[in-house]
Length: 267
Image (cartoon, rainbow, N blue to C red; front, side, top):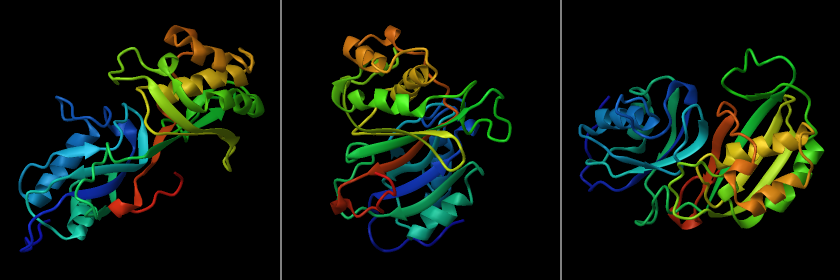
């Protein structure tokens, strides 16, 4: 699908996308062209008639989903917003969809560096039998979990801390310091354990490591005070194993109002 180029010079475009992470090796482009970024850039190029490079708000790992990913790009030509939504979707695989497209109101918008908050959601099935119809969409623990204990264990983790104990060994972030603004644990309407985690930014595997550590508390393997001690110790080896990516979703990204982007539903 192609639309006529308008007379105005092209400007930076921001888009919101969702995707099923099971179909990809993560967000980032891969040599085998198996990343979400690869699929998106190929579809954008089909509309722009030239290569288009993208920047995302958060690089998700293999198997991790997104309902609120934000991406920006500088198109070589100008198209109407509908071309960057319906037109691009016509060239994307079924597991990826562009939800909206806008030209940011300020020229300095950057999908990653302009973000003020990111929220992830992890949904977990806690029962003896493994998931069937929800396979790949939820994490799994093979028994009941004490949600109240997990919520109590999460409270001391809120705030500005060194999260070295919850970062991947290969994490390339320059600093482990992050501000954790929300870590809520509850049972959702489907009977799943839901972890809502919000921070200014995240370290690699940080959410999955937090979930795994809280699950050990909920299962009675560790006391409520243990996650706070792990945080203070700054030693990744002291925390629980990294939980599976299946139930993790990038739910929303927030930006200052001056950029004029759609307001996310939960940040």
